[in-house]
Amino acid sequence: MSKKQVDQNQIKDIAKLAHIPISDIESQQLAKDFAKTLAVVDQLKTADVSRIDSTHQVTAFKNVTREDKVDESLSFTQAEALANAPQQKDGFFLVPKVLTTEDN
Image 1 (tube, helix red, strand yellow):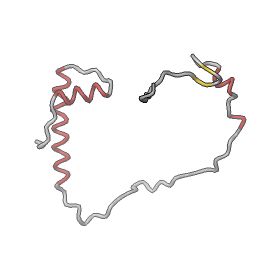
Image 2 (image 1 turned 60 degrees about the vertical axis):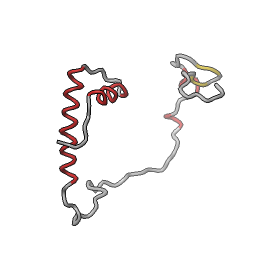
Image 3 (image 1 turned 180 degrees about the horizontal axis):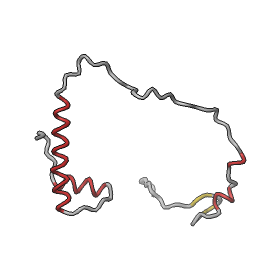
Image 4 (image 1 turned 90 degrees about the horizontal axis):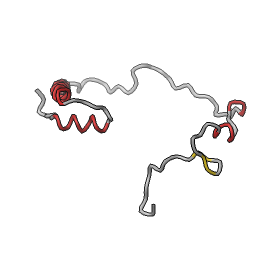
């Protein structure tokens, strides 16, 4: 087994951060499963890769780009964009505040 231990409380914390409801039984099983996964990772760390070249790209895909042109026929007017907005103010979408500063 891995030297790293994953306990039930860590699993519950991760699930809470991800907004995933889990039971005590599920968190116990996930802790065991994570421990097994970490053991496999520890095994992989022992592999001798000193003679292997670094691989940064394995698919040979190339990025396809295009010129950045604005097609006005695909754009909304401000009125169209705001037509279904639940709330708006002065021509902008009105959304709940998500960031705060000391001033507000």
